[in-house]
Image 1 (spheres, rainbow, N blue to C red):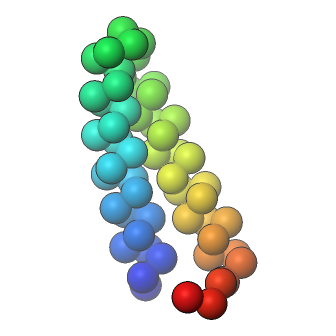
Image 2: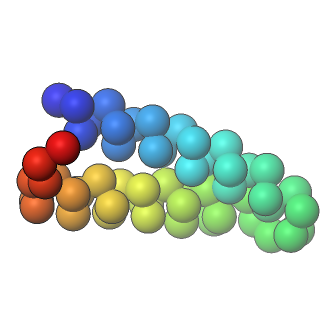
Length: 54
């Protein structure tokens, strides 16, 4: 459950970061946001597959 919340936080943060940086670089904000969000989801999936001791 904690990983799911972490993934959602990464998704929102990545999305907003993508929106902000897209204004600077003048690329499609949706493409960049989806890329960053997908990266966050992939990282969350990998960390869920390999549980680490915190």
